[in-house]
Figure 1 (tube, rainbow, N blue to C red):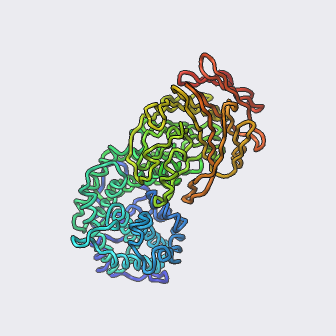
Figure 2: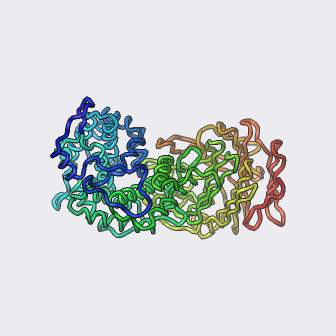
Figure 3: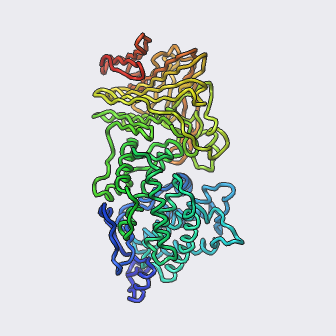
Length: 638
């Protein structure tokens, strides 16, 4: 039954129902949470293709269920400021497209100047919210507005020909995202769409199917997320629109590409080879939805999909920050994880993962998360940065720290890829909680090249120990790493009970070198105590960063630098603690809660024949004595 503009239902003739079924664009099929994790089943021939996302569309806004690639997410937040479907529709109806792209809309207006704004417009992120709100309300006006945009775009952007070659609009992710979004528009619009509207969408999708097969379908296999996303788009069209020419090839090619990515684009520990934290919900949704499309439409899913989805869920659950977002490390937006975890749990029949409270090391991805238990006050992310370049920044041996649900030290994150600050700041060494040696920043990522080649480094987690009273992680960056200026650098991070965090840097060098230990803060509320050479993070429950040898620090410079917060770039402090040493050098800092005007402890370090002894004394817990020696840490007294 089709709803009229006022919300009442109009009858649909049996002939029209048959026509819609033949188009394979009806509202047939419903998978609640997911299908059984086993053999693929064939849909009823009477029902036609199964759109397995109706239940999720009833619960989630489109942007929550379909996490965006990071370029799309940054532009979405800049132009709309929300993922809520009602807000998206209001923004489009309020003229955001015309204000940004001109009236009439210039679909290619920014193609040569601001490519991310250009592709956001042409990927149709904003269209499925209209169809979803129609499905929830029955108000035909949502479909009227949606189809006006589709019709205008179709008239202005004919499929490329030999005499009119493809621009960015008809290439790559633009075609993939449009295929997926138009599929959602078609199925959520269902019988509310008129016959001529369904025909228009069907004809447009045929053009997209041809371009997908000629593009992603012939592309050499790689591990880049664009290719796996293109395969998902092919699977959408091949399963949901089986009357399209080439539907069988779309299905077969999609499964082959997705199989390659499951095998090659993910580590055995669940991490992704691109080292993209914010991208991870987007990556996981590709394989979640590919699985649902397969098992509900008689297609054998790629081998190993279910175990891979379990690893993806475990990775998301373990790495998520206390506020339920992925760390903004590398080209990342702080993406929420709960919708992805919830839907993965449904697909996996309750065998997904919940948010993790334990410390976890990912030996292939070369990251670790340190958490105290049972207090759950601290979250520390250790990132060795074994990959640098492309989407991966120059934050070798970096860390993020949260206390009591609030960020203390954060990564600078990322910005809109069209913003020059991406290469002048966000991807440079100085933007991270790392160390600059002799003033060097990573040469490749600190140039004006937007996409520096990705390289594998020898930066590694070299030790990991979880004891009753501590969690210890040691990372190492060799002297051969060019940014290290010939210095072999090891960074140890220790979380002692729920009391404090220690950062111990050891520099093994010949000759004198200058070191800057960098701390990147989330807000302007940071104070330097020039007497004690300590830092106070106001608004984070009085967290103090105390040097164990303040006399060795020559200077603490506090400057404002760009920081990404929910897609907006603000200015926030970076502290550089500088000193110069000849030969082997040690630097220890203790992060400990206290009052804003009073540190919660006193600290000191002593060199002995066995290594470096650190004493942390407090009225709250007495004295803790730690020994750092031989690449390990031992608690001497607590």
